[in-house]
Image 1 (cartoon, rainbow, N blue to C red):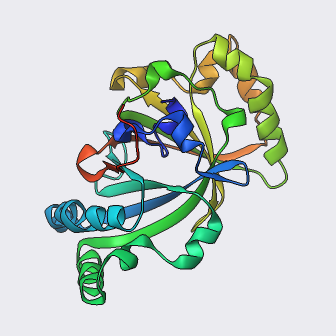
Image 2 (cartoon, helix red, strand yellow; image 1 turned 90 degrees about the vertical axis):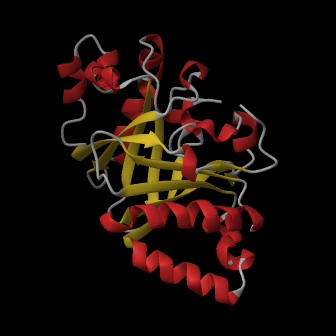
Length: 252
């Protein structure tokens, strides 16, 4: 299982192999649905119980093959949770969500009421994985800490950012800098690029970002002047309690 399948699927210990995730492609691309949920501080226990006991079992019955859950690490919104599921084709959304398909109307309404009581906000995104711009390694598969860097690109400069990544793939690989590149394409807020690095420990944060692959980091950063308009960094930890792998998923 590769890094890029670890985080923003991200599918970490959910146990999805690279071959399995490749089946979830949209016209030759790989897409994921990412839900970001802000939990009410006084309702965390109720929220976790709802997902563990009712929502996740229902999603599995509704045909969702796996779901990867992440919570804020040492740096981030303590009450935020992120859930990642594969998106096989946008046309699948025409049939509605898996949750109402798996529950009776009464149970579905009750679950929605509990979600409203336990959450402040819920946002849903469609995220495209860019394998052509990523550097993968089996050596970091299964790691449960992820540094996520959200990058906004200036209008009309997306091609420059892609070219910088593509032209330096060999440089990143030779330096042992491993990361996945994702594009958050649909959902609230601006379109952002996400750089996801899975870490062995929090001590790895001291190594810096992906520009550490360059002998002259200042020169490398100057290539992106005017291309990047904002940067946001946070750390996530994998949440095995709220994650699941489907019966068809191979074990890790």
